[in-house]
Length: 328
Image (cartoon, rainbow, N blue to C red):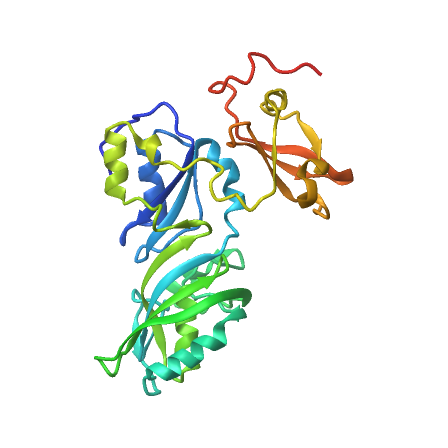
């Protein structure tokens, strides 16, 4: 993953949506972009396994302050499920064992998929990063132990069979489009789908097609990112820090208010939100927008309907907000 490129830009603030290839880990991609951008401030919007590809949003500079508002967003995938065998890891990287039951036909898989739509109790894979007694489950599994993992509630919003291949009658494969809640294990879905059709199955391939509002349309291949960094135009690939937060209610600030927000000192009221503010709950997030529509800060609704500045995205050194902090 070495790029051979040193720091090329003084500062980058924004969201870089990567189309992660098969092979590197998500942390490998983060490390590469950190070197290309010359920044230590970088976060990601949910990891992908090495064998998986697709949408991986990275948050650079000031954009790291909004990562938390994206982590709970729903995800979408194109999953390839292989029937007729189970896997110790629930995916193609594990040890395979032939199923006892006969492989399913297309109609049986379609019927089973419909039963998964909605909230489900899902048991994480044995080879997962979940902790059991303070230790990672995969560490226990690698030692031959069987970690006792507690099921958790996940939600499958949509499920659709988009391709069926039974050329190998003992190992038919299904391409399934899945939209699900954050934290869902798609390889556990493959495992459970195999059991639901009276056979066994594992995840043969996975491509993330969306992470919250970010899709493959915005995703950039790593080669394009490397080329942009070498040409000192990496900033041109970034989405603004406020991208994808349009569903949050917003208040547009006057120039004088913007100067105060730059130092974290602004407090307004939910009445500024108009009808949207009616019934808004304490703790809810509200976008504070600069006059040009860019995201200046995130405020929280406090007791009494106050809007209190929480996360400031203004760079006081880079933006002409004022030469000195406002006086109390």
